[in-house]
Length: 248
Image (tube, rainbow, N blue to C red):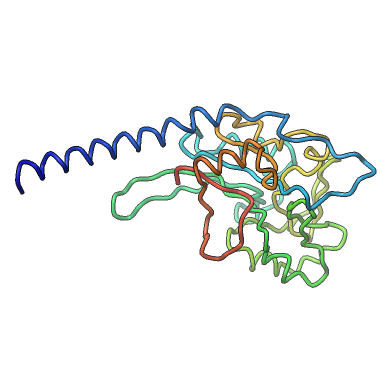
């Protein structure tokens, strides 16, 4: 390699470092904090509309606890995670922290995984009663009144984001009823969204998560995705998830 080639290599290498630094700094600018203004209350007399599609963008680098606070907030909001009669294997998990390790470099990181609120949810396709459903605004959830507990949806979900209630429950949250013999999962805190509030997990990690309307090109989440991109878990499945990640 000649000296000119070495200098050219160094120039490109330094330019690459500059680009990488920019990619790191950009989230500092855009991911300021979760904002209640990202959600507008839906009037009681209006149904959910397909004009909106709710989603969230999670920056794994900004989750100082790997997402544990998001999981705890979900437990408090929906009253799961302490079913004394259920075994450890049968405990519900609307959201869980997953550790990922590169087998070659041994680099590890963690991220919270919950229902990814797919545009084309396989859990809805396999449900025989229509209990597993997607609302017009993209929120995927389970209707407890019509779920028969067949668990087909659990088998169909590639994210293992659903769990089954095996035991009787006590002290349930009025805004988030659960039921023995039914399947449950993250519902994006639909009761809060309809009131113009952020999901509980988003409020628990305000500097790491943006929530908002994916159909609005001017929303903060759309602007962040446009500027920074966003990774889907198992994008190869073509489900077009409503939950996206940075730095995974």
